[in-house]
Image 1 (tube, rainbow, N blue to C red):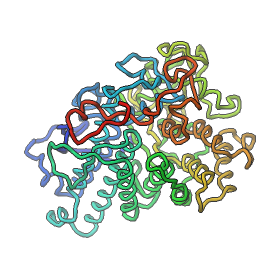
Image 2 (image 1 turned 180 degrees about the vertical axis):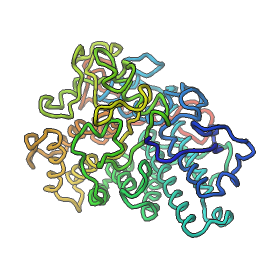
Image 3 (image 1 turned 90 degrees about the vertical axis):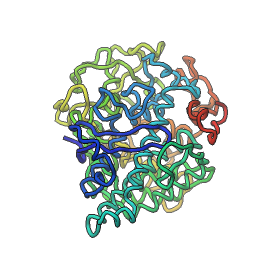
Length: 526
């Protein structure tokens, strides 16, 4: 079992504009009269169980597995899972992934032709703010005054204070996603009234400052790096999110924060994480043992069943002549592949990261709707490092490594190349070559100082981190997402690729929310 801690009862959460509530997953019903905060939060274990539900907001969609009771409405429950929606936005919009299905507007992601009424964009938006709402509720119920009122003291109080810091981290993470995907968004914290109301809109630079200040505030309170329970955030996760925020500051606030990025990369690197000797072991069903992982979204084929998460990532990638059993599955969904632009970045004969299924697949995509057009990806599997299948052959055990050391190495190198002080070009080169030594099984793939350029880093990030939810953000930071300086197959909806409008560097706020809330202004161009 890979769950970090069990959720053992229902938790009522009042939302500010979603009008929804949350209940427990995989538990027996309880008396609704117990659904009040004085009962829920009266013990340390109660607080921990609510915190478990907040973490689970990144993994599951509702309260009864994939069968129903979705936390948000208006979209199929499996489609609305947090990680699945995030993956759609970060991967399907780029050269790293296409999908063959015709579900509503899904193909508009790759062609970059979406609009403000897109159901998948709305699902990501509402899922993000549902998660923020859950965090706000926990933070609201764990103030000093609440702990005084409930008689907590000593070690129990100190533990709840740490739980609160973790909830603030999870809120900062979701607000970071909102900042990156949508820009100017509704803004609500624990200090706002509970119940339905129309939140004000926060500007992107102010939201950047909020996320930064939250992470800096909780840094000394969080568990030391690598010292928390698996699946829970610690200082390493805080430092990595700060480094990511600073690396992209030029996009978010028009300021270079490369020096700050170097600072927080150094904190992570010096905390004792090590590269996993085998690259693919990081994406298998027993990857909870990965020494490289800084923070992962946890999945368990028996305890956290969902049609999203790594169940989606693994199942959707299997089709054609691929054997589902080799991936720990009873069947594949025949959906996702990659483009030739991505394949051509690899020395496929030598680079072990080039995990492409080519049997029966064409390199070029003539029809996105045909699974055998485009190479399939074999990176994620529901089998263990010893070859055993996961606990269930439909729902996957594989955790999703949201933050890992190789990403931090590459952020460090990029920030140094962008002029960040406190770093060293020689050290940056060593970090990149450590990654490539693992990829090539020796020094044959190592590069020289002259070869370490920003363009090289962008391509190396694609080779190392593909399908891990980074590509859209990376391309925007490099100015290559929407414009004609970099094209890939079917970008803009044409086989050879075409430039698209810069408005697509941000997703629109859902038209339904803009219509309902007079405080919101739509992003330009939508």
